[in-house]
Amino acid sequence: MNIYVGSLHFKMSEAELKEIFEEYGEVTSAKIIIDKYSGKSKGFGFVEMPNDAEAKKAIEELNGAEVSGRNIIVNESIERTDRRSNFRGGDNNDRRGGTGGGNRRDNYR
Image (cartoon, rainbow, N blue to C red; front, top):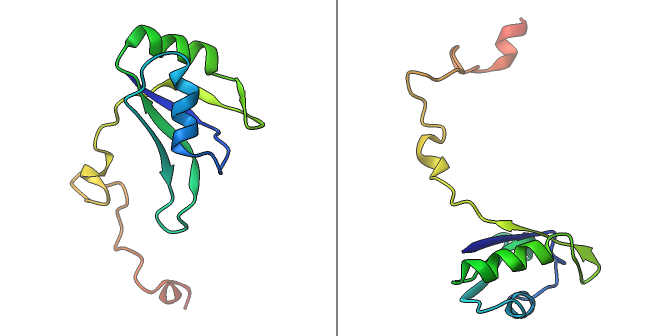
């Protein structure tokens, strides 16, 4: 089961995150999401546990628990669909309408 973990302390390592969840069972991976521009933690991550019963117990007991001075958010991660497939694609259902704005100063002369 893939588990979302939010409100993490920004200095938490992936090894520390994995260690927290290993108290409930086997952890196959622990990943903290890093901002690609700053190189710093975004304060959330994902933990993968192969045993659903152990994962559910970890979710139940860790959601709202204090870790490194912060109350973490823990819940089952829902697989996201590819949201970028229509990203600024502009199809016939495009609601923007108009001519695209052009030089907006021209509208006020």
